[in-house]
Every structure is written in C-alpha cells, then in structure tokens.
Image (cartoon, rainbow, N blue to C red; front, side, top):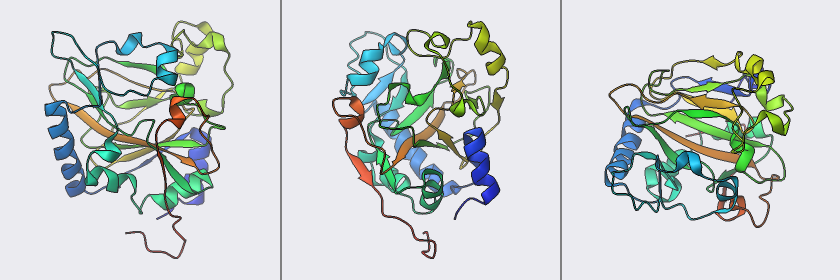
Length: 270
C-alpha cells in the first residue's frame, strides 16, 4: 500500500495525514490487552504525571534512564509505557509492520529505521488525573543530523477533544521560529503575541480505533487532558531515514536503531 500523489503532497504540505481504519479491530484489541496488563502492573520503564512538567531541557536531551524512579507515597498516574519494542512480540510486530512500510519509505524518501530512544511508547490519558499537553515539536529534544523523522500514532480506542485527541497546527513544520516564541522548556508559548495567530489555525479531529496518524517531527501539536471516565490509550513510535544520523553523546544515540528491509513496489505487503 502506498499514498497517492495527492496524499503524499498533503503530508508534505500540512505535516500530517490520517490513515482511516488502517489497523483491524482484532489487532488493536490484542495490542490493547497487553498494554492494559503492563499499565495495571506499572511495569517499568514508565513515565508518570509526577514531575512531568518540571523536567529540565538537559534531562530530556541527555538522560537515558527511562525508569520512573518514583518514590512518592501517592499512587502515580502513568503517562506512558516506554520501550515497548522490547516488551512484547505484538508491539514489535506492529512497529515492523510491512503494510505501512511502503508509505513510510515514500514520506522519508529513504530506507526506514525505527528509533527506539524516542516515543516507542504506549501513551495514555487517564480519566480526570491526566494533564494537558502543551504545544510542542517532538524534535526539540531529539538530536539528529536533520529533521527527516516521522511519528506513527495508532488509536487503540476512540479519541476526541474530550479525552485528549492530538491537535495540530498545519504547516508549522515548515515555519521558522525564534527562540523567543518558546518558553524555557521549549513549549510553544500561548502568551507570546506573535504565536496567537499561528495557534488560531489549529485543527482537530476525532479518531476511531485503528486509525493511524503520521506526523512530521517539527509539526506543532498538543492535547487536552482526559475529562471522560475511560482511559485513552494509544501506540506511538518514530522512524527516520537511514541517512539521518543520531548525534553522538546525546540520548538519541544511546538506544539501538532497527533498520527495516526495503519493501519493493512489486512485493506483497503482508
């Protein structure tokens, strides 16, 4: 399966594209079952809500220990399961999926490499206890030779504004910003006057189970907190082109990369 010329042009212009009903229900339910088991048992490495907004730029760029290291008396709310590629064969199989690989090859214009140091996560928005996610570019803490990185977001259940669906600022991956437009944690400031017109162009949608969103590493995006009574659980991982190199000495270079075989045009993707 590949994108049409119009779809590919849409991705490059807008910075994202949605592949509706891309993953079947049975596969989503199998992934969701494993994810829920790991969430219930809080199997490390995980990220919790505790201290999430206080992490320094240096921590996010350099630290490679992905355990939560929570020593708090209260029960922490899990934001994500990290390092899912190594957790279960079903997670690994989705990240190496052959059906989506020709699309990723099209977008990257290169062979596809999984970056296990970034995303590689089950993302959650827990009912009422989750926090909103501010406007940001994923690339801000990643250290690579260029920006040819794309994230793959799989909705394992329904997603809407009420439970924290992703919102995007179309075309923001092609914009040039000054340092003043971001705060000290490199979130895109909502109070900076020049940003407000840009933020007004945001777009939001709803996702159904099995929908996949592909988005560029520089695309500004955010999400509300979950105000419903049910957890929102999603699967996200990131790929790069093989010519894009992690910068030595940074977290981006501290985790293994998985180069996937190229799918030829006449090869059946199973």
